[in-house]
Length: 435
Image (cartoon, rainbow, N blue to C red; front, side, top):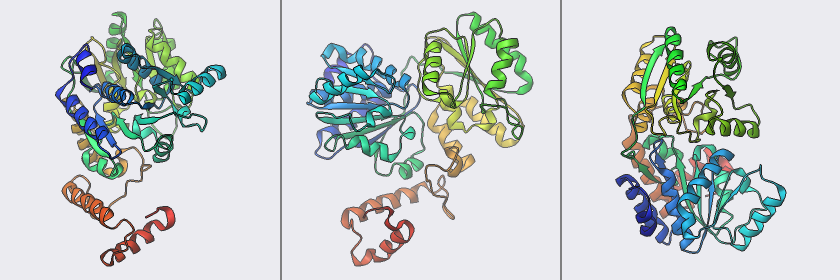
């Protein structure tokens, strides 16, 4: 790894070097690496994955990098090529949008071992994607991929090392439950050149002033995001919608600028085209739902306005805020909110006071509880009747260590002292798990 690190046009942070050492030790050992890499927005996770991929390729293996969207995958391809092309490492992109002829060519080269690193979307999971010698799998934005998808891609190699990355700061407590099977690495330091994103929480009554500020920045040549909680108007919910706002902003408020909108109900191809246009500077103001939360790098975008920000979780607001502040310009995030309850004010104050995603995630968990931490309960985080995930972290860690010890000593739970435990496991999960 050291040769590629020494050749980089910038210095890595201490946190990045520490994480790379953990990954290096894993990759050198006889055990398969299963590691979760958490790093705040802009902390430099991608370069860590590039260096890990370099090591795998130089050790004779192929690498798979899986991203949740085509535009993010192509962004990764660009980053990987920038660093690795000089070492004669062949990177290729596989998404559902490529032509049949091109795809056949890629699959052939992949199987023969001519491609070292394959970067793509869910398209990589298809059965006809066959690697010659897959040794490392990296999934970006892990919460977008389920456990089945993770194991499906791993099955394409012979126990490849696994690195899962997320920019969603997950408090260590929750990480232990969600990813109990993974070792956890954290990049808890930002590169020294990152400017702090100035964050302001304002009431809806400030809308005109906010709009004038957006105009000022766009006239200076910058671009803006405006984020809404809803796609369409909803009579039951008093919140701004993308379509309604886009209409008003296009025809009235920002009629002198190029305004477009994007939301999750659009076809993937349509979303990618709009994001590409925004990236290329062909759109001045992009009105969006949280679909822009993950990934795309637009260094010229320097302001984000979040409508009805009281409707978002703090961790989600922090993720959204990370879409700006990616270039050389001072960036701003304006959180417009309704309602003046203590909790709303407290949450807005946290966002104004800190740019540290881990502090924000801990506060979010403290204020909202685990069930709502991810917006819904889709992650299967259990609701505890007695324990409090935030307050009882030490007990949770002890229990996790004990669970690992029991599985190591008695994986089938056949020992006399584990008979009752086996009954409980069977009662709760039946035949859904294999012991």
